[in-house]
Amino acid sequence: MACRVQDKTIDDVLELLVAEGFEGMAEAMSIMLNEAMRLDRSRHLGAGPWERAEARQGYANGYKPKQVKSRIGNLSVQVPQTRDTDFYPASLERGIRSERALKLALAEMYVQGVSTRKVARITEELCGFEISSTQVSRATAMLDEQLVAWRERALGSFPYVILDARYEKVRHGGRVIDCAVLVALGVDTEGKRQVLGCAVSLSEAELHWREFLSSLKDRGLHGIVFFVSDAHEGLKAARKAVFPSVPWQRCQFHLQQNAQRYVPRHSMKKPVAADIRAIFNAQDETEAKRLLEHFIQRYEETAPKLASWAESAIPEGFSVFDLPEHHRKRLRTSNVLERVNKEIKRRTRVATLFPNEASCLRLVTAVLMEISDEWETGRIYLTMDEK
Image 1 (tube, one colour):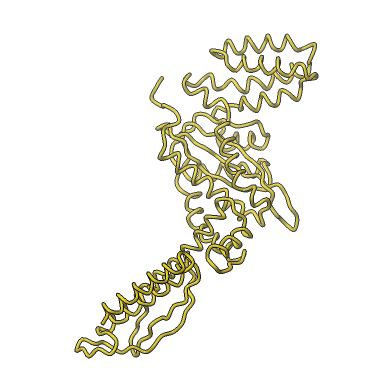
Image 2 (cartoon, one colour):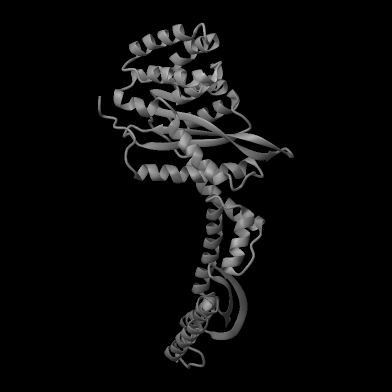
């Protein structure tokens, strides 16, 4: 009997798909799921419908209608019931898991940079039912446990650490402000990159950078021999407070940009940039200092503010000369984190405005976690055993 029912079910499904194609997928799946649940009940009872059997453990008791949301649409199913036995179809349990998977997929869509309104509209078009922005946000929150575990994971020895920040618009206290997204990247003893952590703070003030760096230290970050970052005062003060003895390299790219503020005439911009680039490309620190002296002498009359700035600022970009030569090119700037920040921006610009700091941190963490996972399985960033 069961075989004949199965054969008839398959025939019904095939006829439905032939007649309606993909439009009939939801109905076809409902037919198959109903049949699977009937077979499941027969196995549970030890006998098929109207079958006399000594092994029978109970009796069927009709069906209960149920709507199940799935990745192919809204399924109308008939859940088999039993009399005096504890039974629930295993196949429907899998359907419930599929519903949860759908919610996680929606969360992933949001993580990929699709706004909640778009997710709701796309889901309605693809799946045939509507999901509200509130449901999407609730589904996204299901990622939090995994993301928090990643942000709080134990760290180890990272000789090189690069720090940077970007800003995202967040609603806070009834108004929209620019919140700082703090990010730390490390290069481990094997030469591979890893995102060490991230935080969303109200600003780049020393207090927030110090909390962030202290959290990295509390998670076991050690063995640092070199920091790379820009010269933000809050970051500089926090770094000295938490890791006071670690040498620091000011990002040469940011130095190049900062120099242009002190150039009095547009015609001088390219020559100034070329001169600074020559200083940073020097073979060693001695040659760099010689070129810097020449730079100061050249511009002390035509651009005195530039010369004064260069005398104090440019030497902050010389720490890299203490590193092995084959490490200098990649550690003289924070450009590797600039590229990471561009990827964050690409994902977050769809959202435009985050409802709170937690929402911003969730998306940023997911993006950084994805990037860091790719790095761990990719090629090494620096060869650490060469001298």
